[in-house]
Length: 318
Image (cartoon, rainbow, N blue to C red; front, side, top):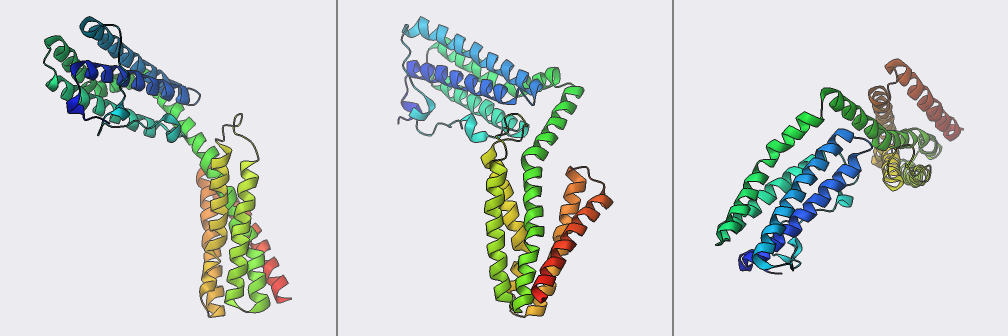
């Protein structure tokens, strides 16, 4: 790797050309990734990619005049201390906030680069172009606001907000809620059956731990294999499986942890209190995100939890 201060004007221009090409590709990747769910924002990033392409053409024209046809390949990763760009696949799943924040960082970095490069240039035409590009990148933030104003009308913003909410529900809330419900409800029977059958907090804890982890693995695989998300919009199956599996495990662990208390009756009372809190949280999530009326959600969750809880006690006490 080389230090930026060691680069010649020829190499600075070559670095600027490759940087503009890379930024343009990133903006187009943003546009492609957002097109299905956020078409207005996709158009904004297409226009920003067009600006980067115009900068690239200006740089190439000046390079040809000064140094000829061959442009040496110099990229950001070749220069010590130069800011690296994260590939778009590392930002998946794409969200509007994440993408726009990345774009702001790119504009700031480009402005800082051109300003430093202009300070080092001695050739008047190179210095002028680099200074103009520094000013252009500094104005990109206001340009982005202009794109937002032109492309993101009130109706477009409302549509994108609705789409973002739908994606949140499909890719996070639904698999997480399914896992939380399974972990909180289905593990009640084995835990409390073991507790009342043995009268031992430790035995109940071991059974609860095994049930929580086992249910998490099972639910994670079931969710991940249910569909690939290409038609339903539910996102990557691996991600959904991880979310569902983790929430299932947590749902089972919450009311298992009280059985670490050696005193059996105290541990059981604490576990029952935790179960009530879990069912209340599940009811709230169903009302908040799944549009289930609160009374209906409470009756559904409470009735199911009570049946499983009673089953565990009856089996354990018998």
